[in-house]
Figure 1 (cartoon, rainbow, N blue to C red):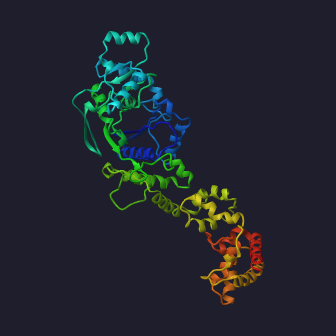
Figure 2: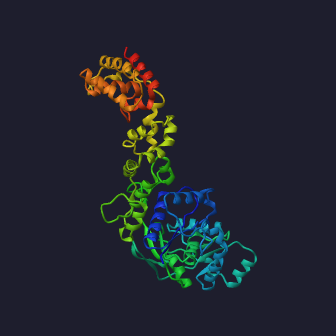
Length: 479
């Protein structure tokens, strides 16, 4: 059975690159009838952020990526938090020491810094020189008995080749002479990411490892560990990065990298997931819109790209707008409600608000600016009443308002159809175009040249009393 894992570090919010890694891992498992495992890799205590695990849970659940095994749901291969597995790693490292595939290293940070500086002075890239590998066993034991601090390093062969096959990148081989003896167990007794993920992937039965291509250079060293233990290697699938442009990755510093940032900017989660799915994967046809179930059905490794994906916020915005258009009136109102409250407007006529806003909304955060005039009439200039297209000027606008105010005031019920019939009836009775009547009324009601709805909808939303107040204020401006 296919077993994949998403293994994030709890270091903050969910980066869009991490979200895509989780998504592809989830889709691959589900498409192949396998299991999707969540593992929290918190061995780097210096980068741990309080609350970050909850962000991981919240994000994955909110977009429908439910895991089969994990810290909160359990499973047969737990614990699923690396810090809770701490006692597991040292015995494996000691097993490697017995096989001469790893060794104790007692070099201090000062000594290593000196060697790095010397290498830099020679114009060389620093690589650990296996200094402690050559210590006699008695000396190693003496230092251990004395309680000297140590790390455990992998003993990479000095000659030969380390290689692996990747389903995206094909066969990759590196010269062992170019590989460093990476640390497996740190001085605080915690495993490094590089060691822990190999042990965890094996002991959890992970069959397919999907991760970013920044790990391509480390994978040969991982495979040397698998070989040292005599373990079967997983299948590797390395993903290309998501770029902001041709030369820059998505940057946390530039504020364009986090999932919850985009949710906060008024993007729908479904639209974000849909767009992220297409960053590095192609379904092989012209489709652009997918539900999660449709993504599961369509996803395949063959559709994944070797080229970096460019994150285009304009394309995401377009896709989000299309998702908004497809919402029901009730769904749109539910999403828009916090933004109505932010703008300080009532929702008695939510259906009218949805009708005028839904076709114009690309992201929900646009709503307050579009409807702010409903809460408070802006201070506007009488010049707004002049419009060549509707053939209105100050004199025409004044005459229109003189007709519209008493006609609207006389309405027995302030209802949309009645307002519509009254205003368009005035145009017909006086031989005027509809626009000649509606433009001055809308300007007086909204105090803005551009509004998401026309004079009739705005009058409904404002109600009788406020509409008549604003119409009279507009008439005063024209005197």
